[in-house]
Length: 279
Image (cartoon, helix red, strand yellow):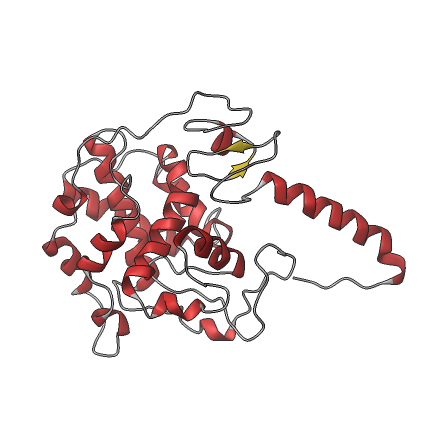
């Protein structure tokens, strides 16, 4: 982020500070809610405004729909994410230099899933299969079929948002992508830490050292940022994960790769992929 100069920019700085305060209240505040009276507590426990917070599942505040609970349709995720399915992804990773081949396991995923029991259990059976297919399509793309734990050349990039005072960067740490969905930026490490109870700001590498924690961060990001847009189609999930870089012609090749994995997994699960696949 660009730094501000002093002197003539004093007024813009003051305005920026005010705007940051306003924006921070309209976005994620805390997973356990305790929101300001004018903010909604979303179904996932975050404070904010708009349909993602005040719509379906809203727990408190100026909700636009009544609180709801997941359908919990009885789908067993383990029955869909079979050893053959999981290992089929893993088998397509590169050679022995793929650190993820000995890191990512189905057991670690299922263990992490205990912390997110609603994953893949809302809506119809087909909805569940589409959610699971979408999750693993993105995981496949982000990790190169479970090859990568750390972002390629991530250490050379700066993912510290110094304007985020809620989750300040530790200057001795780096917040590049790690894990199945490549958790990135200090504010994501900080918010994930608060939700999962680990010290992501001071020990971000723990996401790359503990496979269960690694999957938990992916499921946290999915539940918080991606699942709310699932009903809009797979394309909306691409936008939620990497839209600024890939969507609207940003990188059509990676968009098509994600769509290809999703369609493949939907086919394996015997379900139609639905509409609105692109972004």
